Figure (spheres, rainbow, N blue to C red):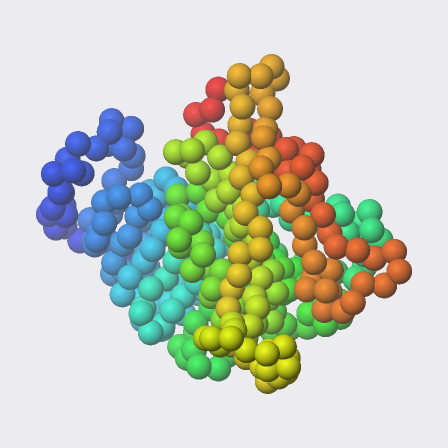
Length: 317
C-alpha cells in the first residue's frame, strides 16, 4: 500500500465544527486526499490512486466527486479498479473539467434502480418481448467524437432492443440512474450527459432519487424533443424544422412521488401522478405491431417497488 503523507487536517468551517456525533464516528479520510467540501456528498481532490481508494472506503453515501483527474490518471484509476476487482462505478468522467464522479453501489442505491429495471423486465416477459431486448447493465460507454481523453460513463441499469443496440459500442435506449446522497440536480446532469454524449441515441432516462428529508422516492422520466424557435411559427415550418434535425432538448414527461405512510397497519405506500409509462417506439425504435403496446409499471408495481426500497433504508425500524 502506498504511504499516506503526513499533513495537518483541512481547516473546518464553524458550521462543520458542530458536526453530529454520528458523523464524528465515521472513518477518517486519508490525509493526503485533499478535501474541498465537508458536506455530504463528499468532494475530494485527487492525489494518488491508493488514497482515492481509501477515500471511497470511507465514504458513507453512494456518491463521490473527484477533482483534478487528468485523462492519464483516469486510465490508471480504471486499470486499478479492474485489477483490484473493485465494484464502484464511474458515473461520468469529463476530461475538460477533470472531474470524475463515482457511484458507490450501496444496498439502497442498488434497490432504487434494480427494483425498477426488474419490474420493467417482467413486463417484457408478460408482453412476449423478452427476446427482442438486451440488458446492458452498467457497461462503460465512451464518448468518441468531440470528447477526447477517455470521457465516459457507466449507468446503473441500461438496455436496448435487439439487434439494433446489441453490438459493441451501441448505446442503450433506456437508462435508469439512482441517487441517495447524490442530489437531484446532479442526477439531472447525468441525464443530460446520456442524451448529449450518445448523440441522442439514448431515448429515455429515468431518475430515481431517495429523498431522506421528505421520506419519499422521486421518479422522473425524461425524453427529448425538438426545441421550437422563438416566436410563432406555422405547422409547415414546424415540420420542416423536425425534418432538418433541429436542436433536441430534454423534457420531463413524468414526475412521480412515492411516500411511506406509517400511520396505517401494515405500512402503506402512496403513489402520486399515476403509473410509469415507457413508450414502445422509443424503447424499440419502431412502431408497435399487433398485440404490442407501451410498457407500464402500474401503481401496484410502484408500491411493491417502494416497499423493497424502504426495506434496505439504514436505520429504519
